[in-house]
Length: 109
Image 1 (cartoon, rainbow, N blue to C red):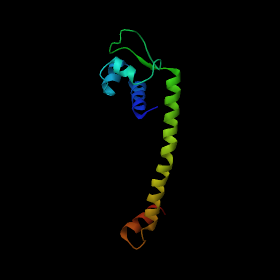
Image 2 (image 1 turned 45 degrees about the vertical axis):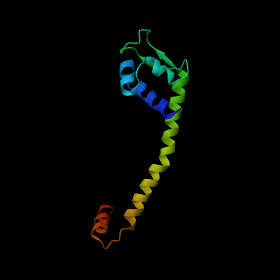
Image 3 (image 1 turned 45 degrees about the horizontal axis):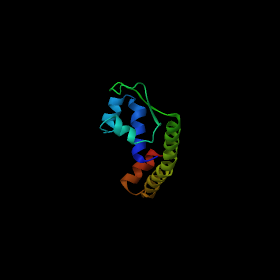
Image 4 (image 1 turned 180 degrees about the vertical axis):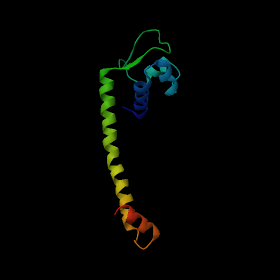
């Protein structure tokens, strides 16, 4: 699944109605939305394709979307832990002689 498809799926999951999905995803019309995915991956609540028509991810697309979201979280987790470790390391390297070091020392006592 491409980044653009992920972004569109995020929009569909959040907003559901065709009008809002097209507006938020900056897509011109129903046909342009359909062209972003292979046939059969998007379902619609009716064949009027008005602003109130619900856009539904097929089971296959929903499974792929949820898998991608899960993998995205686990790819970012090491980065978050690394940033926290760097901050803790920086705070630990501040000497106790400085004013900031004394304040931090008092906070963590």
